Image 1 (tube, rainbow, N blue to C red):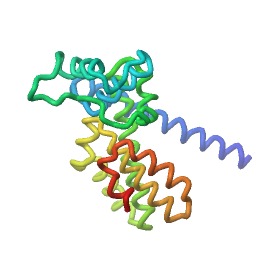
Image 2 (image 1 turned 90 degrees about the vertical axis):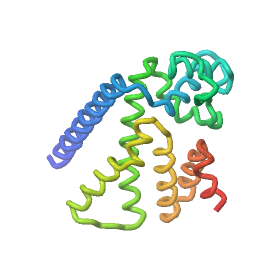
Image 3 (image 1 turned 60 degrees about the horizontal axis):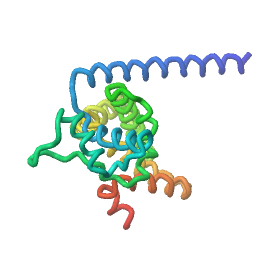
Length: 204
């Protein structure tokens, strides 16, 4: 009987999580449809799709033109950002699942949901690292702040992978503290897709 009750409880939890995540994605899709942007994600979504489905280099002028056309409706002017892929080629490991989605707004919505979940996970991991045990109200305020402050909202809207990089670094620090060096190594390796952010940490 206890086993059956546990199974029902876990089943209920899974259903609730699916409903919440689906609601987040629908809300993100409505936002993406009404608010063009997400260029940080657009660059790598197009670059990955061109490589996987067309065999075109993500660093080519052709790919850059495809990105610019989607972002600006035309080639970029001299005073505008060229929106070229600059991440290492293995970054497609991160973007590949989203590149399978043909519609950009849907892909952006799913990506935003992923980043939102990553922000929550980052907050949780950060608490674990310092062994902080706040009261319930303080914890709720902390999680809300983590989701709503400027440095969370801006990369979320832009679709910047830096949120996942931050989660990877925090996860690596926690893994090192707990003696899980292999996991830390994998996480640190994945954070190198944005080397300008992680270089100092990796050198250290």
